[in-house]
Length: 290
Image (cartoon, helix red, strand yellow):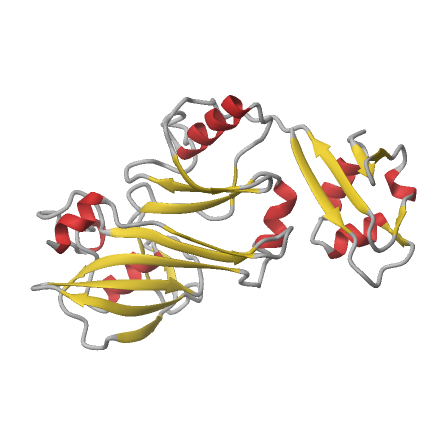
């Protein structure tokens, strides 16, 4: 069961709780679930008719929502560098899908998270804010209640930052740069993406961290989050990721594309505190550096 709490800030006097929560990012759909949950409280007192409730500065409203999931909980060890009552950040290993598919319903990050929730006694579903490719390792931000997803990642706004560490073939000429190329589906492949004039706007900023003999270690910051964005962008400028044979990289030194989600930072959707979480490079990418 998911518990969410909001404290009414200064300057609010006798405002309908529905309007207050709408301004907090709660959608109409979620308000209906909250309203009829039978688990709504104001200042720790149960509220029988939330639609009639007026709130003012200092009032504390909270609710519980039961969630059901078709995903199978599994006891799979996962690294959790950050967790509180509202958010979970997991350090995903390479080779693990984020979501189950028709052909692979177990062994995913979703199965592992639900297994962890079950062990902790939480009745929660799986709500990732973003995804990683199967063979991209690193940090994934997950909200414990679906209504928080809208607040931390509203459409058209960028409230959290993602930084990736990558190793690409060749030596980039510029130590800092921006790749601004639209991305679309490759008509000849179910999986591949490519640069297309009529594709979706996509921007990647990068900074070189170290030059190797025939490779470059860099960090990439996403301004947009398109499928395979970093992989497609660096392949397009002639520097595909090492190990990324889907986009022209060689796999003689590593058995997957050398890409790691190394940093996530954001303003907390409930506490408004700034949160920054980092993850060290995994062993297979460290070996490339040596």
